[in-house]
Length: 519
View 1 (cartoon, one colour):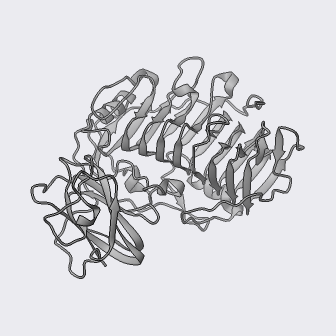
View 2 (cartoon, rainbow, N blue to C red):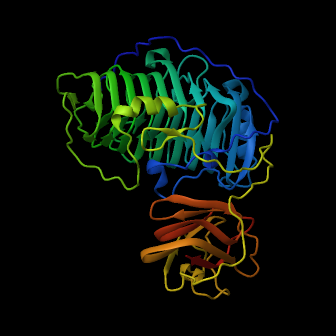
View 3 (cartoon, rainbow, N blue to C red):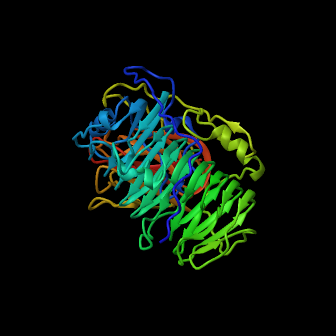
């Protein structure tokens, strides 16, 4: 395989310095509360909510991040870790505990689920240390800067990736991040945002990727084809040699991104990879779309893009540029709703919204920046002992017709002797119980049904066992609300065919006797 030439840096990247502040209660909300929620493919496959409904903990070093993870009751206990200050290899030690599997010199999210890592206050900078997500699910990384991570030289971390995901990872949302290198492979750097070895249902949004030889890949080799789908939207790629991204066999939805100074190549689907490329703005770049450095073809569907001072190479044995007049050679179906900004305003809207410490602003879908409404969260502490504040609380039983009667039910694996149907039969002496301490149960209808409340009743002898939970629109993967404890739960009136109650934490084995639904 041919490799692109080393990055031609326009300017040296200065190292940021942030003062670590401990023990401060912040008004900055957590990721799950501060934004409208995950977007793109991260909303599918059950959705991505990170640590919503769990404890909120403050950390100023990598070791404290690991301590927060390890201090949980289990590897799936929801947690939001608010980070302020500069995390380095030197202040990131391995920590042991029931809720973690960490390593020194890298932020290790391994074999865990239901975690939000969010920068707050004066900012979170991961300086020369990468974030490694492995064998994990339901992870949010938001409002952080990761810079100058190396695979050679000193110090080294995370194989040279700013954020790297591998080995059975699914449902990850990285949002409002700034990922920066200071050169290419010859200078000791690798990718800024890499996914491999069965990494699925990922979204990268409102982020900056800058000054690197490699933007990122989906699939580490031409035989690593079980990755994706991935969404990239409202990101700024600047001064990158290649891989924005490289797609090996994966499907990607790429819309409303701003590409400036792609020096050798850009979006590179190959080995059957497919890219839906909508309303992006490419400026002062070369070969921004096509199959490059291989004879294994990839495919693209294009619409609404602007190519501003883009040059194209001649087709060859190992190069198949899409330009100079890109046309579609496949179709890609997108399963979620999204709004497209006009390509003409992409430079301005991405500049106004992308990157860490930019107020978590997003596009309103009409080329204007807006800040999502935040909701109250629990106050962080310096240890993993904070008490979660649910976003929904139990109230009295609602009136009206229980729409679950006559509906169908299904869910995750169940304990021996229990039935999905027990949650909708009106008999509180029977129940559904998950095979473990967490699980999900759903009510579904043959046609769209409007609901705004559910009532969860626990079986006799199991009262109080249900801990944290989230309610999902199972049609779209959208999270309707989160909280803890059984009872009546209200949310915005929603028309759907299937609603899911997902238990993400418990004090003992949950037993759901009734899953009632109301208009």
